Image (cartoon, rainbow, N blue to C red):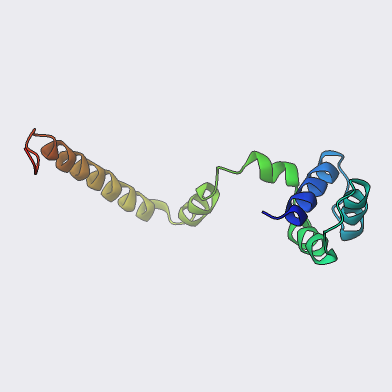
Length: 111
């Protein structure tokens, strides 16, 4: 990451921490106050548009929970048909476990 990206990221985090709306002007003001000179205005515009209407604190708290809600939402209206893929997945896991246990018989390629 470049200094411009880091400075803009930190400025956005500061604004979010103070519950202030993230705008290009406010980002630029914080960056100038920090004496970071090499930040072009495009960075503040990009960050402000990317964070527009989003809760930055919520984004930080949910970093690791990428695909959960989308999968639940897609399976939510299907009813009984959603159970079949889950059962198939369990069967595949059991088959993989059997294959893994067969590999661990003590016989290796170079033994």
